[in-house]
Length: 265
Image (tube, helix red, strand yellow):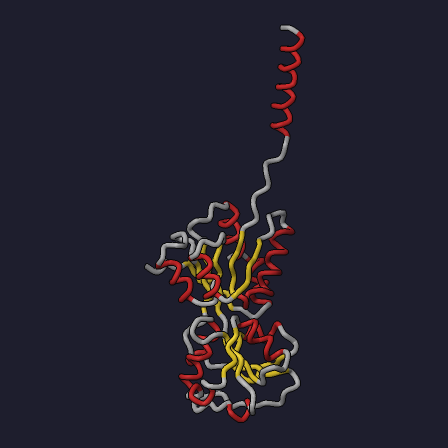
């Protein structure tokens, strides 16, 4: 073996040895498209997931309708975490979620809120009248035709007989967190948000809770997106169903259901 050949041979051995000792490439962090009302809980869960040495999820928060439409248009998400069944059904019917991965994970409730210093009082029940408490202001809600919290709120107001009196006095927001902010800043005297949102903002107080039978059940499903090729998506979904995530969800006021469900056809 001449000197040049020997040099090349030894260099090859070194390269093979180094290749065998280098760590495997780090897995890509999974991307989650999640309803705005999940922010506090999922931020905590993402931190705890990363502390266990796993790639910290990248979470994009917005109204469920906005996120579902983005996924339909090809946005690169690995998981979708919706604030209602309708928008998960929407993607399922378009064959955009992976079969067998859908889970009805959480439940929530909706409440009527006011700024912290407000003395507004409302009698919750049939014949609901918000006019006096609203004064000259508007009722802050998520968009009543698309945002889940807005749809739940409208359904409850209709069931209790209060919709006719406020339908022309709604400040419709792009998400439930945007509606919360209107009340928190004192820009609206009343608002309808999830109980978990109210608990997350010290500048608002709960005036009354809407009866559970006044609106469809508030269920948060999560599923892996069909086009996801990230192996961490399945691992993260399992973590969301586990004890550490359960504690984080319950800390924010969610009820954990953790029920596997068949995708809508």
